[in-house]
Amino acid sequence: MRIISLNMNGIRAADRKGFYPWLEQQDADVVCLQETRIQQHQLTEQMLKPNGMHSFFHCAKRPGYSGVAIYSKQKPTRVHVGLDWEPFDNEGRMLRVDFGQTTVISLYLPSGSSKESRQEFKYKCMSKVKAYMDKIAKTRRKVIMCGDWNIAHTEKDLKNWRGNKKNSGFLPEEREWMTSLFAQSTWVDNFRSVYPDEEGGGYTWWSNRGNAFANNTGWRIDYQICTSNIAKKALKTWVFKNKRFSDHAPLIADYAL
Image 1: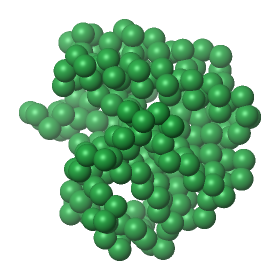
Image 2 (image 1 turned 45 degrees about the vertical axis):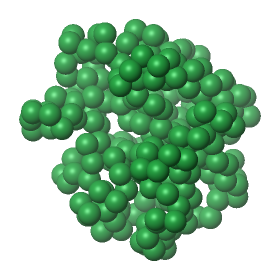
Image 3 (image 1 turned 30 degrees about the vertical axis):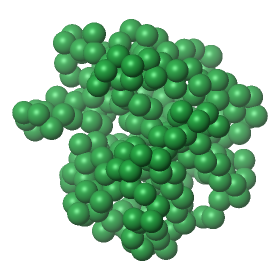
Image 4 (image 1 turned 90 degrees about the vertical axis):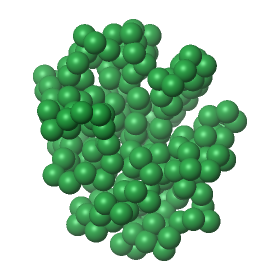
């Protein structure tokens, strides 16, 4: 089972950069997208049925903002839209599909970099998501939560960690929250499990300022976080950097499912 996760920074912009021809060559079973920035009525036929895949979109109420989507080869047995918390769901930040006992989620946690009130909202979202993760873990389902978490967990997860200690995305409270997700070994950071000491090769986002991408001055803020019963079935994971569709790069993982 191949799963791809990508923050598109606008689905129409990614489309213009050749995302869909590339996707057709990837043989993905499930594709989780974030920051689609589109409304349902604006979706093209290609966006709705790439290579014949099933598609599901959760668009933000605010036009041109946020939004998540999932493509799948197989028709899901169940689709659930949102976290059932209105402030979060109004921004189109979570979508879940079930395939029997396997669940795949596309998640887009907010950034808190624009102003203090957004950072406070981010903390509330983190709390709600953690409660959801605790609840779903008790069901013993096989769960993969893909997406842009907007947090670099450790110093190995961004190039300029010394200069970002007081910035959203690398704040102590955010990093401690991520540590708490993995504390009981119920949830596993797939990339870090496969590559415990990897630095640089796992970055998934680069600023558009300067020559961040060329210099690999990046952040690892996109994850596939799995319940332990599926993490052990991970075969390989990698970041695709040969072609750029966004300021993020696709995070790809293969599982023996």
